[in-house]
Amino acid sequence: MSQASGDKPLDPGAAQVIDKARRLMVIASLTTFIALAAVLGVIGYRVSQTVGSGPSTAMDAAALVPSGAKVVSTAIGEGRIAVTIEAGAAQEVRLFDLRTLQPAGRIRLTPKP
Image (tube, rainbow, N blue to C red; front, side, top):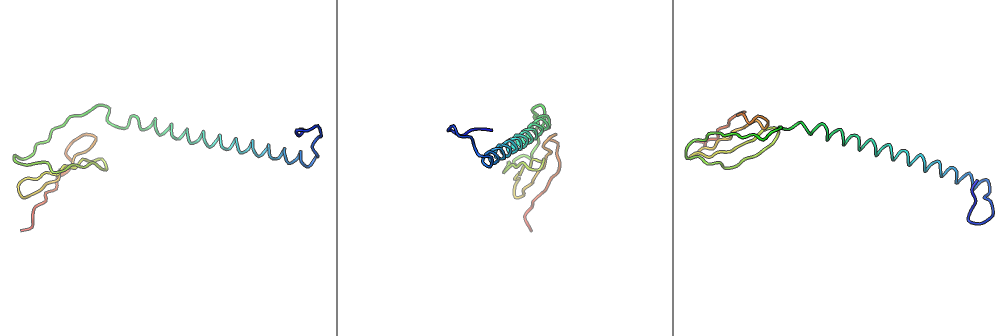
């Protein structure tokens, strides 16, 4: 048994309370350590899985636009690049695949007659 700061030994009831508190602290410390190890393991797994998921090299691509047209805006989302082109009175949205930069679609926006 442990002793208090003085020379007197602890009574059995106090010694039991201190032993119970020590056990609870050990259990709480182990639980915290296991939870922290699990979180760090998941983060490490996710980082290692996403490292090779993107394109490994930089890609260059060129897309032809009609003469006199200008690019109004661009947007990236859900694996696609959207380029809005204005040619005369009409606008056109061209979609490209983000990984391959190949054309994925085209939407023509014309004014209502």
